[in-house]
Every structure is written in C-alpha cells, then in structure tokens.
Length: 157
Length: 403
Ligand SMILES: [Zn+2]
Image (tube, rainbow over all chains, first blue to last red; front, top):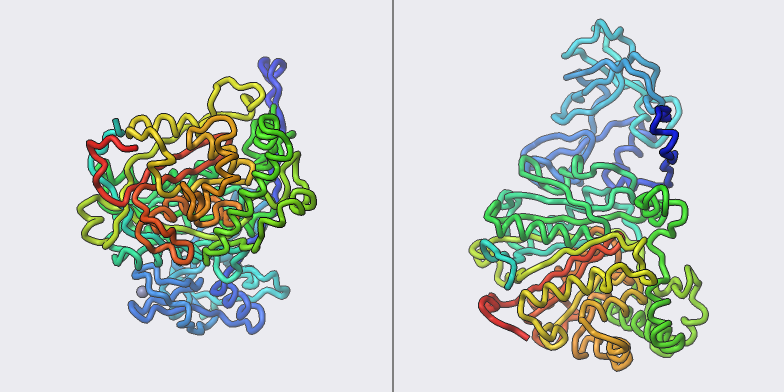
C-alpha cells in the first residue's frame, strides 16, 4: 500500500489497517464426499440429476436447472475431459497459486455437463487450444481442497 | 395516516431451518436452500412463480464476500431479478420491508426474501463488528456488540438490586418461551429460583452484562414469500398482512445515553411515528404479540419501554408482574427471542415470521392461547438502526382508527 505524501497529507492523518479475522468454512456433506473421494481413492465424483440428466462436477445438492435434489445420485467420472475455455494469467500477486504466466482452464470432465475450473500445465501458453483433451494429475500431498488435483495436462494423441 | 401503499401485500409463505450452534452437514447455499424449499412448500408454489429474489447477510462474519453472487445455486434466483441487502443486524427485517415495497409498488407480484448467517464459520463476530467502527475514533476501543450502557441507565434509574432482578427475570422468561419452541437454538431450562445465583455467578462480560444476558451465536436461514393481495389470497389459505413499517437509524456511539443529542433513541422515535400514523394510541392494548429483536436481556427491558412508549419504571413493573409472559397482557417473544436464537441476518426476519405463524395458529408448542389479530415486530442493527413493522391477521384496518 502506498502512503499519500502530498501537501494535504501533512495535515491529514492516515490510519493504516489490516483486517485479519479467523474463520472457517463448512464444506457440507456433498462437497466433503467429493474431497474425501479425491483424497483417499483418487476418484472424481459427480452427481446426476435424475430429471434432466445433467451431470454436475463439482457436485451440488440441487440441480440448478430444476431444483431437483440430486445429492444421493452420485456417479463416478474418469480422469479425462476437454478444455472448453481458458485464460493465461500474466499479472503477479501474492494470492496466486503459481508463478505467472500460467493457464487457468475450464474443463468439462468426460460424462459431465458442468465444468471444473483448474490449472492447466504441460503446454506452452502460446500453444493451448480450446477443445484440447486433458487429464488429471493428482497432487502428491493432500490439502483437503480442490488442489488435491494438482493440475490438468494435455493427453498426447 | 398510514404510508401510502399502492396495494396490499401479504406474507404467503414462511420457511426456516432449525437454528443451531453449527451446521457442518451443509454449506451456505445448501442451508439457504433448505429454507427456500420450506417457504415454497409452505406457500404451495414453485420457484417459477417467484418474480424476484432478495438476499442478505452480514458478510464480515463468514469472511466470504458478495455471497449473493454464488448463492444462486441455493436461492433459486437463476435467471431472475435478484439483489442483496445488508444493514447489519437489521438485515432480515430490511429484507421484508424491501420485499413489501417491491410488491406494494407493483414492480413484482411475488418476491422471496432470504436472510441467513452461519456464525460458527466466523472465528470472531465481535472482531468483525469492530471493523465497522470509525477507524480514527472507535475501532481501537470498540468492544463489538457487547455493551453495558443499557444496564447502567436502568440501574441509575431504579437501583441495582431491582434492575438486576428484572433483567434476569426477563432472561429466564425468554428461556421459558424458547424451551417451548422446537426451532430455538438455546433451550437451557432455567427456573425463576435461579435468579440470585445467575446474578452472582454467570461469567461477567462487560460492566453489568453477563454471559447469560447475551444473545447466542447461531447458524440458520429464513425465507419468506410476499405477494400482492390478489396473489396472496390465491396461493395462501392464511395470508398475513403487512400493514406498515418504518426504519429509523443514526450513529449513536458518539451520542450515547450520557450525552444525548436527541432525547429519544431510534426505537422510541420509530414507535412514536409508526403508531401515530396508524392511529394506535395504546400499543399494549392494541397488539396481541410483540416479537422484539433483543440482543441482550438488559437491552430487552430497556427497549420494551421505548417501543411501548412507557415511562419511568412502568416497564419494570410489567416484567415483575409477568405481563410479557405467553399468557400476560402483551406476550413478548413467544419464539424465545434473540438471546435464544441468533443467526444474525435471519434473526430479524424470524420476528415477522414468528408473528405471522402466531396469527395463522401454526406456531407449534409455543402458540399463544389468545387469538392473535394485531402483531408488532422489530429489528435492530448497527449503532441504533431500528426497523419496526405492524402485521395484521385481517385486511380490516383501512380507514380505521385503532387502539
Ligand atoms: Zn435437473
């Protein structure tokens, strides 16, 4: 943060602040089952709406289209999918998960309609293409978060 | 005169989750969705019938910002007009006031309002509140929502012993009501013979305020569906009507009770104006129930005096005589109030919700024995932000001078 150092600031006090409050987030039954399966069996689970057949990954308690409760209707997905969109992150900031530049992708897992946001590695940002087939690379160490998937990488075909 | 309303608005659906200390089994949108489903089921309508969804919480508590953006998966606002309101503790009531305005204006026929907080996800609610205070004058000194000012004022007026007894009697009365309410969070089973013991032994928080006096930290959500008169009559067997509401607010930390810039606090101003424009001269006679946002037992006894426009020790005498019990002259907080249940941004919405359930006869074990025709509900937030609302069982007040 930059402190104001103009004429006015000599007469006007600036009080620095930093908000830091502890907090936690309850992932809930549905989110927890996904993370536990990912962590313990390296399996990616989705839920399927029995009414409109939409498959959601990340899983949701209710279908977004018709509000049907779908949290009991689990389906196991493979570890492959298609890159339906992407962006290249160039700016640098402390909160970012990787050194820039890196690729942030939207991946539609095979058999699912909803898309998962994740990192795409193993391809130069200049060569990344929509429609690329990609597969999961699991993280070596668990963090009990979506980063138990370390990243996606292109499938050589 | 009542505020000019383009058309009448009724409460057509009410849904709430159980209020508890923590809900690990649900994330935020899932908890909200439970209340939304309950409200839709109560109204007997589907999500497609809702024209607009409004949503609110105090976001500093969960430390998740702009939750309305991603809560759509729980609110059901997909492809619907939707916005978020946040006015501190008052949020739940402001949402109902806004929903009423949106429907009364003719903008929408059916509006769903959702209030929630998951306070177990907050590491420090009082820490969060200090971040709302002015950074130069108050942030470094603020004690969050904990204050003893009310207690000091009451003690100065009527003496230590009588004031402490009245506050504790009020607290135990609230617990007795909560014990009958299966949705209430804290149901402690307190008895009046514990007054002496609690006055001495409940852990002190600040000044005269002890742990037992203070509201809980709860998780929960409430959703209410408001509809135009025509639609409300069509979809609900027992619509409850929103007659009028008023919001009065001001900064009161600087102008506190010992250096009053104004002679009345925002509650008394709200009550005076609202009753006057509705022709209600004796609120204790007129109303059959009052659900009041009472963050602590000390505030409870002080604010009852303001809302009911009482003077001197009249309100203390009424507490002592049990006039605010379920079978008293004016039952206060049959739900058990905020000292029992406080999922903050659902809290103020639970007030009109409870009044409506009492009018419908659907309150459950804490249903009042008397017929509830006229109800009052209040919300409170920030540094004296008052929302006060009159609810009616029948659409018969127009042109009337009541009370
Ligand atoms: Zn569906």
